[in-house]
Length: 385
Image (cartoon, rainbow, N blue to C red; front, top):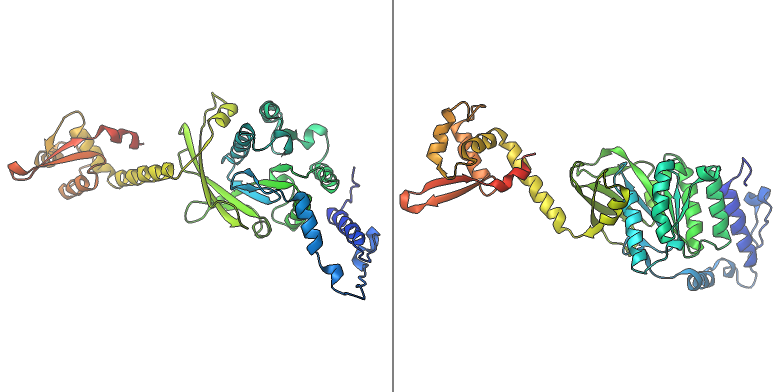
């Protein structure tokens, strides 16, 4: 167990100093004098000691297995950040997408270490049952009666010893491991970089704050340092109302150092009755056509909202009545039961143009002096909410 005054930066610095000495750097390994180390260059070739080409080559041959934990999203030996508002789907995506890759035989559950510092006992047990089926390792400092710092220290020691090679470490959530508004972010990223250089991958799940940008995307809760120093950062937002059974989520990449797709879409069934396991089973990636469909529906809703009074009047007049001529509809404005909001003639005529093909069908009878016959579209009922 580390002492109360344990300093991760000092521990990593000692490791780096030890590695440097192994490559003939003249460095003092005394932890108390690290900041006073002196470098004595090789007299024959002064730059040779600082040239890391050989180390990069040997480390890459040993650790640099190309591939992904989640295709085109979580690249091996990288640090990736995924953030969303609370209950925004980041944990669901992580678990469901990894399980899908396990089922396909692309990765092994035993190579996934899920550090859950966010859940209470009931949610931990729920995830434990799911993880057990796939061999995923679940870690919680509270269940071991240790601190989050102690868990991080243990992982640090495992990385140094090479035990996190070819492993994925998920940190859920990042705010439990460091204060995102302080220099602790840089310290934690140095820790994840150590895992990366030892062949491991880090996925950091984090919260967004309550604010959104002008396009409706969540804003990251913390310093810019995190995005500047990770390999990729994804934000997430729901495209469907929270009450909908089928939820559609849009993921967008901000930061990327190569090899990651720009965006993803996924959907799942949200049901308190069916439970979390059903949500995972219902998860699937989808293409952009789902978003386009929802965009069209939302645009249609906005048209209805813009002409809400006229929409209600036309529905009162037309629903269940078959076709009626436009002149008869305009005359019906005088009936207060059909037109309780007293919409005007010009607004009704304009609404007929705007809502054509959405809420109403319009047929022009060329043989009867271009009379417009209008009927109600039952399909619009799903858009009224």
